Amino acid sequence: MTRVYAAIAVGAVAALLGGTAWYVFARNSADPLAPCRSSVVAGGSGAIGGPFTLVDHNGTEVTEKDVLTKPSLVYFGYTFCPDVCPVDTVRNAEVIDILDEMGHEVTPVFVTVDPGRDTPEVLADYAENIHPRMIGLTGTEAQIAAAAKAYRVVYQADEKKDDYYLVGHMTFTYLMDPEKGFLDFFRREIPADQMAAQVACFLENS
Image (cartoon, rainbow, N blue to C red):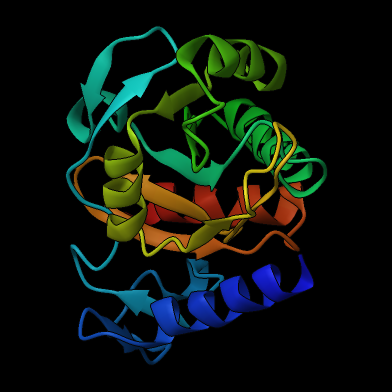
């Protein structure tokens, strides 16, 4: 499993630093949202995110236009994840609640990288336990792969010898805006209060 996560880490760096769609920006007046950013790498419009067709936790086929109707925190993971995903999604739920208190409504979105096990029914139960506004998304292997590619998400499943296989995956949370698209990404080490403050900064200065 260590090798899998090492490969994922390498893929994450390549995804963020490589490719013509990404560029390193200077934190100056040319970028009015620079004080809000947690990352030192950002893309222009369309650098991350894009069209997708998936199935929500109610079993309804949806596109990004149906899901990202408000500012959203998008996270790729899977419900069978034993440690990382629960911590990250609960942190994101806490961020949502803090933002609610600040007067900002943001939608938590969970996209599975394990569609074989994460059926709409499984995601519905997971979403209910994490946050009442959470949208869980699944789909076919091809649909998930296409969505992950659009978001520069790298993931890899262990050999599926039984029902308890693990899936290595990137752990960034993406802040998406229905009009502006990708705004920033957040690492899992950022505490909820700091992340909420940075998200609020974007919402208040966009």
